[in-house]
Image 1 (cartoon, helix red, strand yellow):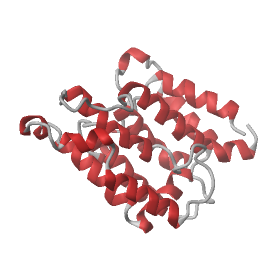
Image 2 (tube, rainbow, N blue to C red; image 1 turned 90 degrees about the horizontal axis):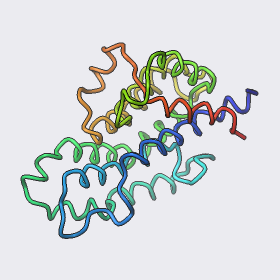
Image 3 (tube, rainbow, N blue to C red; image 1 turned 90 degrees about the vertical axis):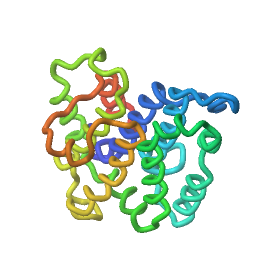
Image 4 (cartoon, rainbow, N blue to C red; image 1 turned 45 degrees about the vertical axis):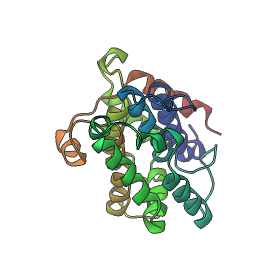
Length: 228
């Protein structure tokens, strides 16, 4: 892998992880039928917000510098809520009560991207990784892991991002390691809430364990070969 490809890999890798998760979690564009509030569909609805967190920029390629207009547009979109999320307000209280953590995840995404400085730091942080080290970290942790280990990879992928961040951190980042990881963790905390993962950022940091779906590693390897 040449230096330019390694530099670009983290953006592509995050996009690959996003595609994998959404393939398993996100409902169709129609969202929830107005007359239904099925718990599984509600869960899938909240997963729409993962697309914001696991793509380093709002455009299709995930490339280029982030402008104030990009951030303002993203904030506006989040505040408006996706269509299925708007309809959740009409669901019975007993249904909505089961999704308190996911709603907190939405609020965490909103607060992150509606704060210009925090959003800019997050965009920077997700790009501050050495591509080769990022892949190597995941490969090392994949020994003995099969797709059957994980039905929904979202929580595992988030944990992987956290565990591998320092190892793959690039010294030419515009932020210090401490500041960059703090910015990243704001997004990963929102992921854990949106996916209703067991535990918190603190418990993941303390666990020392890293599990990830095998298909995610395949995508990461593909990214390393198909980067520009």
